[in-house]
Every structure is written in C-alpha cells, then in structure tokens.
Image (cartoon, rainbow, N blue to C red; front, top):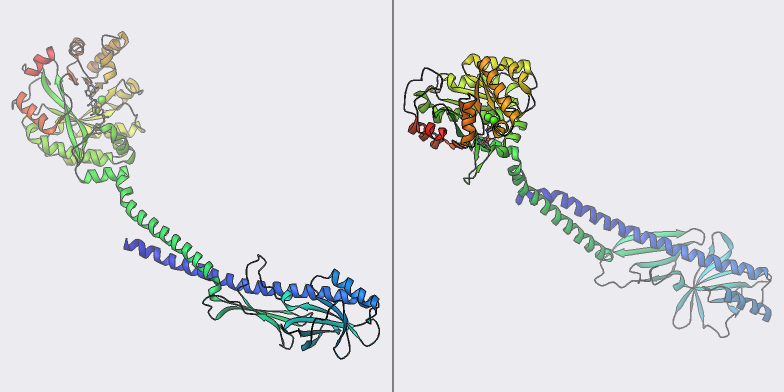
Length: 529
Ligand code: C2E
Ligand code: CA
Ligand code: CA
C-alpha cells in the first residue's frame, strides 16, 4: 500500500503541477486575448466613424444649414455605434447636431491627434449630469473653420460582457497615447485577490491603449475542476499500482510453470506403482512407476494434467530425477531382498537430447539398495525421438549400466516396428488399443502374434498394457505373453500399498532360475480366473 502510494506520488505531483501550469497559462491567454479583442473592436468602431465623417466632408457638410443637418441625421441612421454627429466650432463648442434635443453640457477631458490622420482629433468628452463618457472624433468640415464630429459612447468600446454574454470578470482601462484616462471598468468578483494576469495592448493607428487584468481567483473554477481531475487521475493511478502489486504475486502463483517448479521443491510429485503380473504364475513381477501430483490440500492430480507442460518446459528431467530418488529410497529396502522385482520409469523425448539421463541413473542407483538390473526405462513410441542416432547411443549407454529399456505404447504411435528395432530395446509394451481389440478384431490378433514372434527372435520381453478382464488374460496366455499390467490386477497404487502388496505376496527369496517362473500365488489364482 505504502509502496503504491509512494510510486504513484511522484507522477501524481508532476501531473498536478502540469495541470496547475496549464490553468495559469490559460488565465494569461485569456486576458491577452480579450485585451486584443477589445482593441480590435475599438479600432473597428472608430474606423467606421472616421469613414462616415469623410463621407460627410465629401458631401460638403460644413454648417448648420437644414440640408447639412439632414445629412448628419442620415449618417447617424447608417452608423450604429455613433451616438451623435455634430458641427463643432474651432473653440470646441457644439454648434448643431443630428439630435432634436440638446444632449446637455459637455466638458473636454483630454485630446490627441490621430497618429495615422494628423488632421483628425480624438477627444475624451463627458456629457451631462450622469457623466457619460464619449470618444469624439473630429475632422475639418468641407469648407470653413468648423469641424464635423462623431460621438461614440465609451461603453461601446469597453463591453461589459464577454463574447459569450457572460459578465467580464477582468479589470479594464482604456487610455490615450499619453496615458490620459478614457474609461475603465472594475469588475466585482467575490473575494477578489490581487490581480495576477495582466495584458496591455496598443492600437498604434488611433493612439489607444487597453490594459486588462484578472485576479488569480478568476480561474478558480477551472483550477478546481483541473484539481478534481488531477485528484481523480491520481486516485486511479494509486489504485492501479496497488492492484498491480496485489495481483503480481497472484499472477506468479497462477503461472502453471512456476507452480510446477514450486511443487517440485515442495516434493509434491510422488510415485504411484502399478503392478505387472506374471500371468503364467500369478506372481508380481514388476511395476510401472506413474507420477502423481499430491497437492497441499490432499487432492491427487493424474499426469495428463501436468506431464505435457512438464515436458514442454523441460521440467520433466528434474521431475524424473526426483521421482527416481524417491522410488529408490521408498522401495530400496523391499527390492534389495527381491532382486527379481523390477520397476519401470517413464522417460520423455527431453531425456534424449544429451547424456544427462545416463549420469542421473548412474548417480541415483549405483551402490543403492535398488540394483541397476531392477531398473527399467520406458520410452514412448507416441512421440518419435528427433535424433535416432544419438538416442540409440544413449540407450546403449544406459544398457551398459545394466538397466533395461522398454518401448512403451507399441501400436499406439506411428513409428512402427523398424523404429523399435533400430533403438535396440529389451522390452516392448503393447498398447491398450491392441489388448482391447484382442479376440474382437482378427487384425489385432494377427499383429500380436507377429509381435510375439518378433520379440522371441529378438530376445525381447513383451508386456501387455491396459488389461481389464480375464478373457484378455486368457487370450494373452494363449499367445504366449507372460507379463500383463492393467486394472484387472490393480490400478496404480500409492507407495505404502504397493510395499504392503510386495510384502504380503512375495516372501524374501533368491531370484528364480527362470526370469519370471515362480510358485503359484493368490494373484495367479485370480489371473487364471
Ligand atoms: P503410460 O506410460 O502408458 O501409463 C499407463 C497409463 O495407463 C497409466 O495412466 C495407467 O494408470 C493407465 N492404465 C493402467 N492400466 C489400465 C487399464 O486397465 N485401463 C485403462 N483404461 N488405463 C490403464 P496414468 O497413470 O494416468 O499415466 C498416463 C501417462 O502419463 C502415462 O502413460 C505416461 O505416458 C505419463 N506418465 C506417467 N508418469 C510419468 C512419469 O513419471 N514420467 C513421464 N515422462 N511420463 C509419465
Ligand atoms: Ca509407460
Ligand atoms: Ca504405456
């Protein structure tokens, strides 16, 4: 949790600063943009008034004659932002205007010539008791000493609302080139702080300046919105990091290869033993070691659920090694006094990529209570080995140690007889599919006959696998097959049961002269059906 908060802290803080900077920049942009907008508005309105004054001069307007006053009225009608067109004396007195009534006494507050038009004057005028302020543009009349003038209310140059119609929250001040005050506005904002954003824009054409300023509080809404966003994003980041930290070990737990590695270290892979019976005598002759995964909760997982992954990950080599050690330690004592009993271990293709298996077998069984002659190694025919030459060499090296090699699942794969013969195995295990077809399918019966002949010629032993009923036992005996394995005798048994079975059915004795010949036993009676 703490790590998550710390990890999330730095980027969150940076993000927060980024957003705050963004809000500030937005504030700055906003004031300079509205200052530019107001200057442009003032320039447009003043420019239109000047154009109208030029038109009036061209029409010859120069006095208070009725037709000249009529021209002033028409001009006013056409120009929305000009309040009044008038004739002004050289002394600055308004002689007549387009208005019917007098607009009150006026005072001239400031004046300057227009930079782009030196014959034009730009005055600041206050009229009447209410003190309304105007910008007055004056130009010489067509003839004579008088001027024609246009009055623009300053409020048209300094709008009270934004383009969107919202009240302007900025302070604003318009001035002449010398700094003389034209008009301004002080925005009322609750809890206004000192102005933070300031922008000054100039109109060089008319000698006008606009200064706008906004307090920091004017962007409070945006900032608080951005702060909320920052908060939400930070919370999401913290949650994501915490979730990640929590899920990480879970993911590691859920990785099946990691899980197998952990189970190897915890010794959760254990051997089960399936008896192989001499069906001539009913005696226990051997067993196949079949791996089981006994989980911490006591559930026992069959190999189909983990062997494929163990093989593809290469972990099978480690697992086989620890299986061999466990079998040696668990069965060594009962095997030491029964040298005719053999145990078969399943190997995988991964065991034939190098000589490691030879070293492992030597190291594990040499000098142990379980002799090399009691070890059988089964190679499946289902997945053909990549390199037959090196497989042949490894098999020969294993046989050199005194162990026997069996070809497993014969008939189930596609490798065929020649494959089996090239590897030079000692035992063939006929797959359950042939045993199932025994008696039902004449082809299968013929093939078994051929295999038996071949095995006899090659001095190989035959084991029938997956024998499930006594009819099959009888048929196998008729074929001259001596060894069988299957549920009809026993399923794979836990080590303790298998050991008790050995002790109960097979007294300590010297190996019989012939490989599997032995006195009748209770199992033989069962096998004979
Ligand atoms: P497999 O080597 O052909 O082993 C024989 C399988 O047939 C075993 O299944 C056994 O329980 C089952 N079986 C025995 N008798 C009968 C029967 O009468 N009827 C039927 N329907 N099935 C019978 P299991 O123990 O589930 O093992 C399955 C496969 O897992 C094995 O086939 C073998 O290929 C692999 N395996 C088991 N242990 C190991 C191991 O330690 N190393 C390697 N590399 N593979 C192993
Ligand atoms: Ca096998
Ligand atoms: Ca098999």
